[in-house]
Image 1 (cartoon, rainbow, N blue to C red):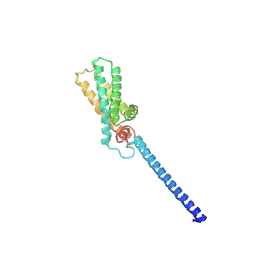
Image 2: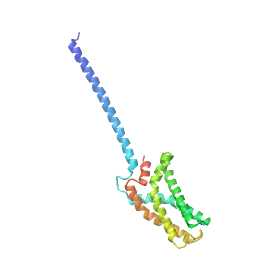
Image 3: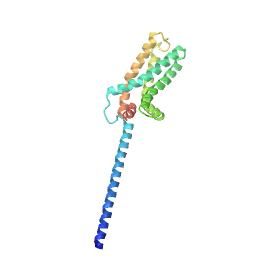
Image 4: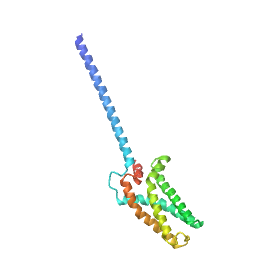
Length: 200
């Protein structure tokens, strides 16, 4: 028969052992939770800052600008062609071209991020964040060139001057927008947002 003191000691040791296991389990749960929170925080920071942590190459900036220019060029050319074909005034043609440039510019970016699994609402937000500044800069340059080249806006679709001026305006817009995109990507803005979602 066990001595009462020995029995109490065994009971106390059992409780201590059980408490140690419970504490150890809580510690593991806490560690797992902390690790999960760390991963979530890292993902959120990466989505917000994109490439902001490293050097941005001119090639990456040029690629982002070319992507934006593609949508802008489609809208710009379509707007100019429609304005010229229907005999619209210069002001109306410019407004139409700008609107279509934004539509096609955003549409191309949305197409890419929707393929990455984003919902439409989030895709719209990403497109707005990625392309708005870039499109604005391009459109200012495009339309300034078209308005300042003598006879470019009044030239017909069969006139080489129209196409030369339009091609020149798009080329100049590309060259001047690359540094803007490089700066924005370096700050984690612009197309850095798109890259963050494509990588996850």
